[in-house]
Image 1 (cartoon, rainbow, N blue to C red):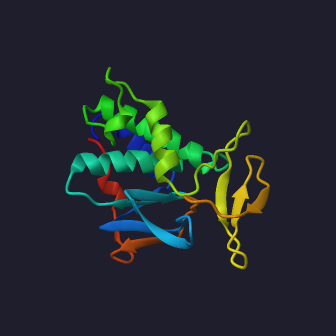
Image 2 (cartoon, helix red, strand yellow):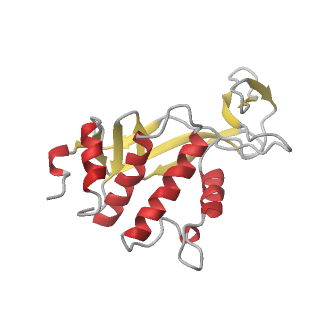
Length: 197
């Protein structure tokens, strides 16, 4: 990350961001397969909760740096921005960061033939891969899956204005489950080691 990201690393430390490294971070997300609720495993590269970053420690320094940049971007985003928009923003900024560092895209579709960040492909990726991020609603702002009613099995949907309603589940409905990390507790990263000369 050095020397280009000196200010970025200093900002993380100044805001009290902490980093814990893991070998694996994944979610067992509730998922409706068209017949019944089941689970779908979502492998994460990292997670952010407030100023706490969890990352997968990779043998690749470039992957570690790009994950740190992506998750560090999340720590500076306003809390009132919908999760979908936070992910769009973080992936776009991560790919722009990768371009500036001469690295390949996070996903091949994230780059246009001209070598620019492909915002439309990033949005499609987030909408497809992330649980409950977007529910298409004709002529209305996108809605998101909040959960399921444990009594009826119906899907709980959150409208763009924050109100919710329930409906019969549809194939592909999903929402985030609890995260699981290996090894438990992870390895704390010494923030004093994350600095540029």
